Amino acid sequence: MPALTDEIKEFIVKGLACFDSPSKVADAVKANFGIEVSRQQVYIYDPRCSQPPAQRWRDLHAVTREKFLRDVAEIGVSHKAVRLQMLDRLAN
Image 1 (cartoon, rainbow, N blue to C red):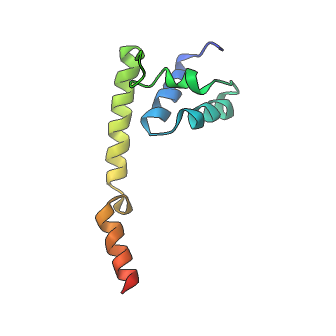
Image 2 (cartoon, rainbow, N blue to C red):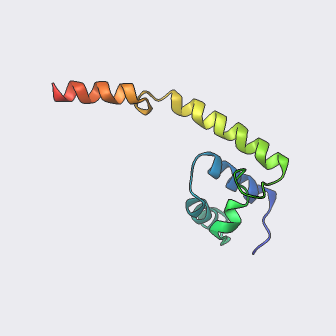
């Protein structure tokens, strides 16, 4: 396994916090940094892992996930009620 810099670790944690799969994050690391990492190496930085990462990575994950969910909540189509209203209008 290649040694990861803090920049790459931060990228991994933020990707996982935004609900990207470990495979997708591993592909993004390869595309952005030119380093090949495995899904298992990416999953180590997920707080749900059996051996959670260091506290700073768990804190970054929590803050990033909260911001992501807040930003998504501002998008009207992300709400089920809005999508149902649109479908109802189309059906009628």
